[in-house]
Length: 344
Image (cartoon, rainbow, N blue to C red; front, top):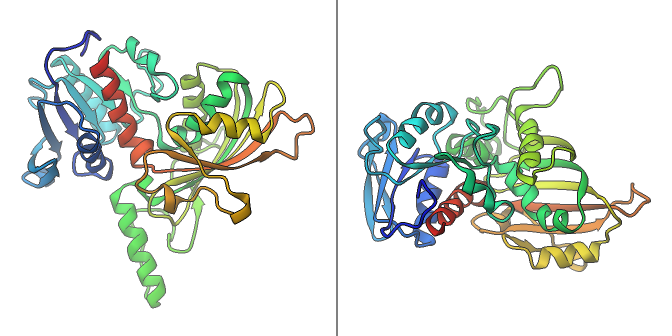
């Protein structure tokens, strides 16, 4: 698997961060997609040692992550934060494993491919032991745009994200549940996970703002990662990322400007046949992508496709998307990369 040559045996797979929200989804995706593996090992911190998680027709015990964890491992799926990735990914690759990392640790490293299988699957051929999974907002925003970009290059992109609690992990999801319950019951609730009250509220994404640019880290990730994945540093991109009181699945309002004029009908045709997306565009019923429908679904939902009235040249389109942050925005994308490796 490291060399890219096909292996005669099924790989030994490890999930690092197995008890987190994305880790649980990684295990579920491996099972649902019948990923060909000889053995699955689950790792987390010492707090989770001994916990058992279901996989196929059995339950597997979680072990403590250590330097010895990667002996005999062929593929390691990391979802435990950038600090753990920086510490243990080199250990894993040194033991002979290929790492697919869901953190931000290696995404902008020029030597590390940043992959969305529907967009740049060929990039995995250049890996040197580590492949990066993009940010969830990036994946959900740009996967539906690739079929457009391929036929009519996108010059400019403006996105506004509506990001669910799932993007901040299981603790944030629980905080949304508990704070909503308290709000409806008229009880005070002290928020601890997120910086502002969450129930019936929304706020700028809870990542650090760069004082020089005014963009927060999430917005900067969308901008930089899109350019790297598309292989086009000239795309002009602006992003506004917002946390909204939705449990699961991010939504994004997108305005794109193409090289040549393009109309809604052409965009619908391109989306309708593209992998990884599903057209949900019914103006008559006012039915468009919603996080409720995207939650638990593999495809990214795309709709509200219309001409951008602010551009008289006819080169701009507005649309709205929703995608499951834990699936295509994280775990599913990583498992798809793993599938590409097993077939390479």
